Image 1 (spheres, rainbow, N blue to C red):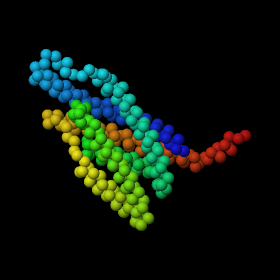
Image 2 (image 1 turned 45 degrees about the vertical axis):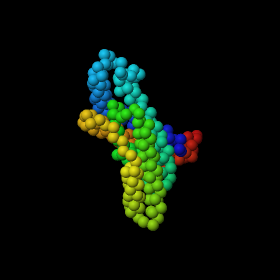
Image 3 (image 1 turned 120 degrees about the vertical axis):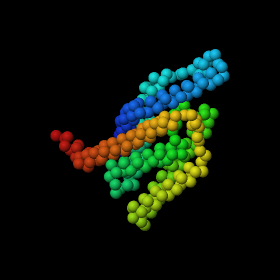
Image 4 (image 1 turned 135 degrees about the vertical axis):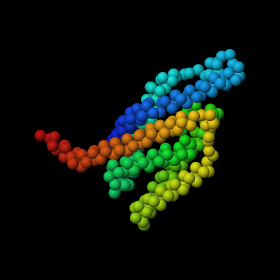
Length: 259
């Protein structure tokens, strides 16, 4: 059963990757190009200020062309990322579905996708939002990455704790009240940690605010599309499979095929 769910999740993730790639190509890449153009202009201005005779000597060699990055590179990265998330989603669904006996597969899948989108993407990015490639000091990349993943790990752990709390409270309170209390505890916990962690703001004052906004909106849209597609498609396919198995059990199908 778990193997079938894993394969189904990866297939749904692959489908979500196609949707995300199309969105990112249309709405995300233009802001990336403008951000790279901004970085190039800064390099050229710095070269002129230092009275360099060879501007290109200051630039690092381009290992992968921009055309490849925006095409095959984007496609490969998005597809691998979405497919892997689809498989991980299926494994988490297999655990959650056993505990949510009062909900159907579609409801469990939708709730799991919504919770994952909030805990895995929204909360960490509210503290450390996505920035275009032209922004950020290379010397601080390890620190920024460690802070981001620390916020991500705590957000996921807090979500799991909130789910356990809701289950424990459900025996003494109604389901709606238990969910509200667990959700409030999650929000309080991640807010306290977000305030405690140091902030990171390396956006130059001269960087176009419009480009930064467009990039972050595109990043949000790509994640929203991925989680929504996985949550809805996986739930629908799983529900159809369960209904089919209940209608035609394996033993019944074997007896029908016998002469």
